[in-house]
Length: 214
Ligand code: SAH
Image 1 (cartoon, rainbow, N blue to C red):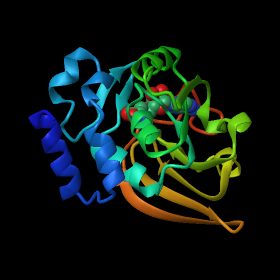
Image 2: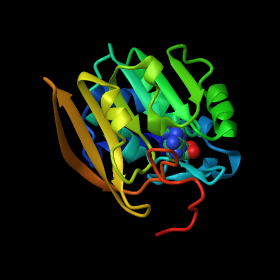
Image 3: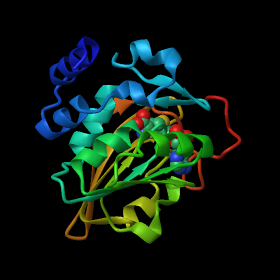
Image 4: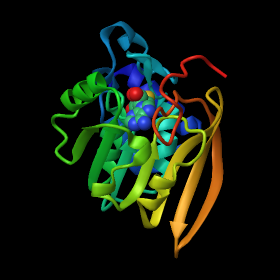
């Protein structure tokens, strides 16, 4: 592992990531393959970075935290909303049986498919993930990497029982990472962390034409 990647792994442990499967998965994926060349030098620092089309690769700590909160053990079918360049999907692909990932920007779908070509258990779809992927439901776990004004009901409907959904909910500028658990027909929600994600743009997220900040 290169020194910058080793430093990232130390940071994740320092910040409280404990699940050895999550740490192993992240240690095994070359993050530099998921960003454009102009930001490769800083790809292992704990921050989001631009990937083009106004979007970002999520900061490593947030990717690790979300993956850990899903409590994956290897047998699950997972929905990943907001593929971007595909890094988080790659991590989930090492932790679960199958990953369906959906991205709304066609160019990023193409980029992610190329980045994930070796990962046979990951499918990248192009479309509005705020509606989930009903034809592939139910999902044992759902991860949303874009900020929503509320938890989209379609995603709760498509969650298996038992199942866990993690999603940033709040304003365009600031959100709470919600952990929504479905168990024995009951939905419970807790807040795991403050966070800041790019907006979930779609019929159950923010409207397409609002580009300015609140
Ligand atoms: N998972 C990525 C994060 C990318 S940023 C990673 O590993 O770093 C979030 C992504 O969500 C952006 O690429 C954005 O285009 C996408 N997105 C926003 N709204 C969406 C929607 N309704 N459906 C699918 N993707 C969406």
